[in-house]
Length: 187
Image 1 (cartoon, helix red, strand yellow):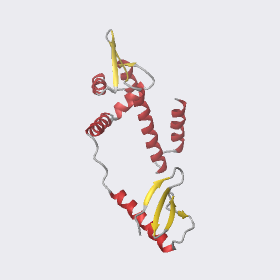
Image 2 (spheres, rainbow, N blue to C red; image 1 turned 90 degrees about the vertical axis):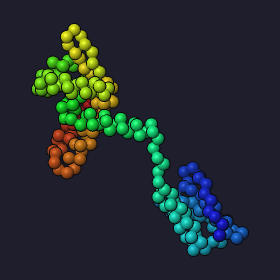
Image 3 (tube, rainbow, N blue to C red; image 1 turned 30 degrees about the vertical axis):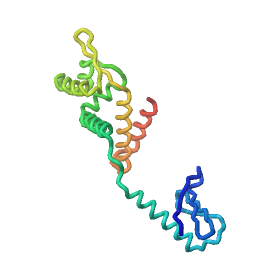
Image 4 (cartoon, helix red, strand yellow; image 1 turned 45 degrees about the vertical axis):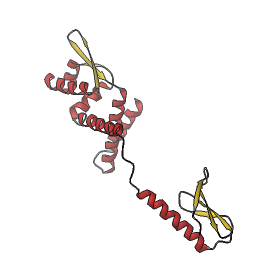
């Protein structure tokens, strides 16, 4: 039997031409591995053989190791991990939640969070150094805002993921989840 060669047909799966003696058999395989073919003199066993070799070939490709990531990609993953580590603090997440509405002074955040100014300043400094927050000074008052609105979006998405997981396990009331979702849609 000759080798099976495949060509892609848009929207119709993969078409395989198999030459056997003087006969030709066109096999179409869709994503569910169902196949159909034009009427030809091939027996059911020949069709089965073609399908089995195509599946084996597909499995061999699936077992191949993925290509190594580039240095740039590795560096980006490192930066993302570093960013996540910076945000892995409940107080910092509360600060981001406060700042999603806009710029606030350090004094306003101290009152809203109920933390010592020194402790808050430490958190703000770390997040400013990582580019998560931006600051400006007006006289003796320092104001902070988010470096990008995408940070607030990422936190909101993660919070919804956690609320859904907790709700699925029955550890959180459905009413709290609905309230959070309505708040998220209203923004």
